[in-house]
Image (cartoon, rainbow, N blue to C red; front, top):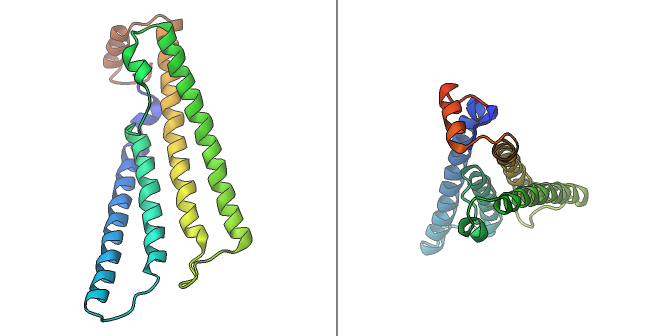
Length: 189
C-alpha cells in the first residue's frame, strides 16, 4: 500500500504511543482497584463499597482506547474470507471498496451515536449512585474511542481508494509502485 502524507508526520508515529501508554495506565488502574478491594475484604480493614463505579469507568476507557489502538494496528476482527480466497481481480477490488464504504459509514454512525449518548447524559444529569461521578466521564470514552477509530478508518480507506485508483485507473503495477516509493524515499505518489 502507498503511504499517505499523514503517515509520515510526528502525530501519526506519536499518537499510538500515547494510546498504548493510556491503555497501560488504565490496565494498571484496574488491577490496583481490584487488588485494593480484595485486600480490604480479606483483612476486613475498610469497606470499599461501590468500587465498581470507578472500576467500570476505568475499564470503559481501557476497552475503548484498546479498540482505537486496534483500528490503528488494523488488528480488529474482520470477516474477509472472500478476499483471502479470491485472486486479484476487479471483483476483489469491488469487495474492498464496499468494505471501505461500510467501515466509514458505520464509523460515522457510531460516532454520532456516541455523541448523542454524551448529550443525553448531560441533559439528564445522570451520576453514579454512591460517588456521584457524572456518567459523561464513562460515556465520553465511547465517543473518544469511536472518534479515534473513525480517524484511522478514514485514513486507511483513503489509502485503499488511492491504491485502487493507481492500480486500476492509472495501471500502475505493485512493483512499479514500490519502486516509485523507494525512489522518492517513501514520499507520497
